[in-house]
Length: 134
Image (cartoon, rainbow, N blue to C red; front, side, top):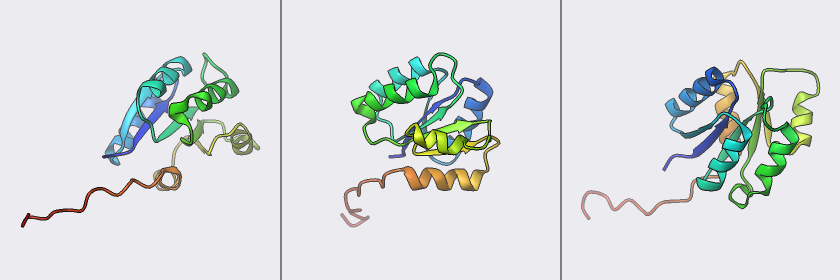
């Protein structure tokens, strides 16, 4: 079963781009355009990782992070901050706000996929393959 990622992105264009990129790389993607929608989805669906736009209009970064981390369904789920602003100290500020990581747009595919792989929990082993003779 593929990992499920929640993409929380205010910009429809950026959300579509991220979702398409992730789906093409084998991930199941849930999409939210604002913080309230993200919290609803997170409470209803099992999620392995969150990609969170750090420029949402309905909730500020700190508030959405606090609310997400308070959800039992997201306990231990990494939240990666996403921004178009590569200002000095932005990555450190995202980590201080308890983001597991931080990326900026435009996204470099190889480093982005590596970042996701580092933060996703290993998939539990499935049942042994019985093979064609069983």
